[in-house]
Figure (tube, rainbow over the protein chains, first blue to last red):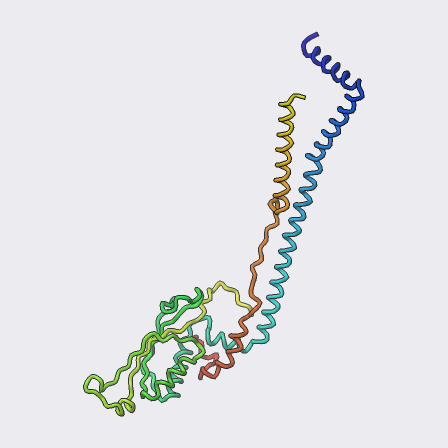
Length: 220
Length: 71
């Protein structure tokens, strides 16, 4: 016989010796039971339990997702109801703070406001749309258009003209105002004359609009 | 039983317990989740305060009609 068979016999003999006693059989049974329990735990129970906890976590995530979807749906429903309720106001808002440059609208209104206060608009000029340099806190989508005009007014009418420009629904930011009077350069005019004489008032302003990208889909 | 063997068994059991505990921790906290979707929230307020103010602003614009649209 070789060494391997001797060792095998020796091992078999040792096992037989252990199992021949009651205590040995008890310990062997306990050890085998523990081994089987550990194997079951490692290969079956723990993966199964982790699978369950994974599913519970997934269900939790899906529940939160559904709750957010429901919340968003409610918000959209609320927005739709508000849109229906404020249809006219939205049209006005679109007009007052539109989504494109509308110089024609500004010219017509400034001219009418001037007429209402016995003033005459003599010049009008517009710059290209750009990000406002005067109001730094504007949202990115709000662009400004530089608008300069000259009005010819009596000094007593100027206040009313400014007031209505300030109250105009489209926000108009007045950057500079320059007054000139023809008689100024030649001689000092009396206070009474200054009230009655007409001034050329050069007003540099900017107005604003929503610069909506063309790729944005508009709801109809 | 040899003490070295006993120590190794104890270390193995502790290692196994730690590994299983870590697996549980990851699982319970959603570390194994493949479901990953986000919902961008929106405000339910259309800006009703501003819109309600529009009707009061309307008279301040002497001319407003759709013809003035820079076409």
